[in-house]
Length: 289
Image 1 (cartoon, rainbow, N blue to C red):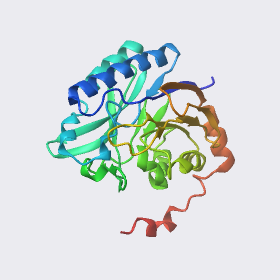
Image 2 (image 1 turned 45 degrees about the vertical axis):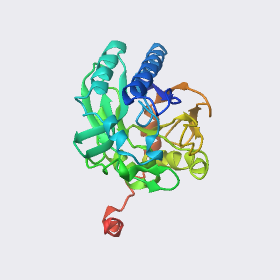
Image 3 (image 1 turned 180 degrees about the vertical axis):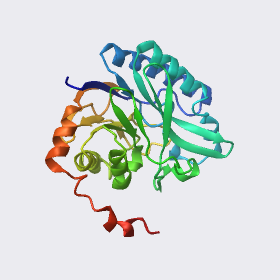
Image 4 (image 1 turned 120 degrees about the vertical axis):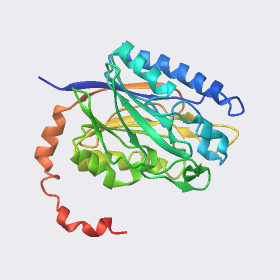
């Protein structure tokens, strides 16, 4: 039988200004996304992925310890527990990016993966952490991920996660493919300018090199008071041939839904045989410090 999997990506603008309490900011964004998750489920989506640290603004535009209070344990924090209930209610698997607190002072940029029955399957922690001007001061907030490149079996699809800046590094994208990923989700927060040119180059290239589908998510809008640039949306799905199947708008909230034919993975991999023709014994120099 054909293995068609309907998936949705949610891109959204921040709701509340940063001067409000963190609780108000978080609640507004959670409420907003609950509506979009319901819409995706009603459209028949079986997997829904949210954007990077979905429940607030891109606070890495400044360096202040206030945002440390935005962290939660994963999976035992309130947001993941709520999303487990939401997944169970709508019978939809969820990829939920949050700001994780492992212990006080140890924080990660994390995405939890939740089965459609509400079971927490595990998490991915962002591996590559940028710290570049202007306005991407992530090393102030996040420790580099240490969980490798896990792949989560939903029963009907195997999914992996790469987060934002990770997409500039082909090594982890390859590891996800070798670990069995059929769909890789990349929740992001990226602004117009230098990276926009790469937005539709790098991830289709990863899809081709590894023979899997990619769902790339970016938020929308300009976020005062930082105003570091326009988050240009343009979330999309691409197939293992690098072709973009569906793309969201640039400047508005949107639930982007597409059907992914997972049978294409076998067809493409049997054609190109990139995994067969790899030469890992020749690549040792790539991992020398």
